[in-house]
Length: 144
Image 1 (cartoon, rainbow, N blue to C red):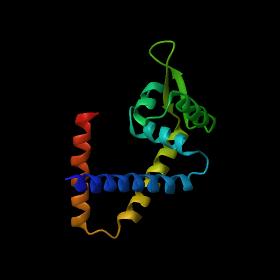
Image 2: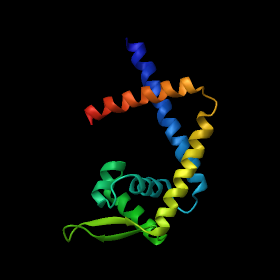
Image 3: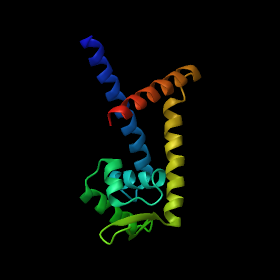
Image 4: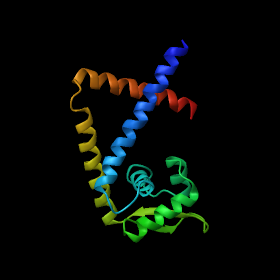
């Protein structure tokens, strides 16, 4: 049984490497910001409509300081704007029209990158992979 768990951990490492490869391909095409900026913008594009800084920290796993730095960078690029949150101490982040366009560009890059990686897989293998990853995601949701 130990060997099966070791093999499973190796496979999970492969998934992490695959994610990293996809993100690095996208980052290579988006030269105007770094990987943490990308993560923050991606989360804003795909997550809560107007997240608070703390929401971004929780959902990305990045520190509050790194979130602040990334939001500063994204604001300088006119991709997001801060506005006062429900209380005076917090801010919510809102996409600008330029930010919405950048989100669409990032989504297209992500889809092309994923397509190029999985193009050689049969539909059956791809379907099986999707189902397995869905089960893994559901399982991890129980422990998060």
